[in-house]
Image 1 (cartoon, helix red, strand yellow):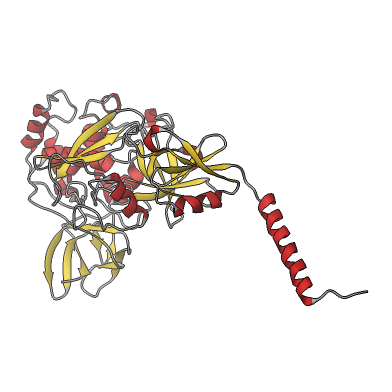
Image 2 (cartoon, rainbow, N blue to C red; image 1 turned 90 degrees about the horizontal axis):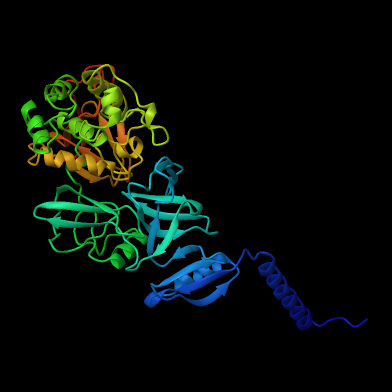
Length: 460
């Protein structure tokens, strides 16, 4: 028998390899994916693929912003840029997500904030990465709907009016339903008569294209502001104080024609909580206004529950009942703030400020992605001239918090997290700050009395 020459063997092997590759591609086809252009209000198929990753590669390689990937049912699986619609369920149902880069879970209710910024799609089209209220998170595609950015969809946006930063929140991306709040003082660099886009409330863009480009690459090169903005009303720690009087709380309610509110004439009760437990009375009052419709909600009237304690989205009637308004405020100050949301040893702790879905009380307290902004908006109206202001920044490294210089480490702000503190004094390479929790014998003691406790971080 005649032996095959080496060149012939190579040809046979190459042919077999090509057949193998072809069969491999054929047997791993996962559906039909069309690369679709939607420019000028029309849709046009650019190409068709039978592997999602091939379609994704073609989308990524194109410079055309008006492209998306659709499956054979017409569902949009990936975008060059656009919005994620979270308003897909009833108000009694929340949507779960996983924070990008972690196993940490979260939840959100799209009825309170419909749109998120699209950032990407996973390898098989089953998960969508987006940003809303400061958090970068993965959602199941079955829970959301993708929309290419165009004049036909309605995103949330920010504007400046006088000295205030206004946030207009979209309640439905397919129509003009929205609500607007003045949430705090305007950031530097932002002007009136301009629409700004942001999905973290820290970096603002005068075009959606610039925002989308920067956020997908996790940068801020094209933001209007040169430094991150942290709204002092949204990032004030609860371990701070207000200089307002009991009468100031009543005046606020009178100006809103809310004199029949359960909150009226309760200023002394809120201030007693500040004096006894070291928890900012104006913040607690603002939160009560937000959660109880200024003390006039049905739940508040029936249960004396001003804070929505246990009033879950799926069962609001499960709200905790209190014997009196004073009992409710005390329970909130002690059981919810001191022992929970301002306790670095508690699982709910993300910082004692109102915050957003990335940091602060909003992370675990509320399904509303803009709960922190709404409470801040009331706080801003109540006390427009803060005498005490927080120092807030993003940690570039782990920051241990000590009971005294070179003492015991009580808790740590990790790299990438937000730290917001009331600074008391700086000297000898140490910064003295208000503690988030009572300190006793060099350790956190949430059952103890908070007595203007101080802790320390390193810094000049």
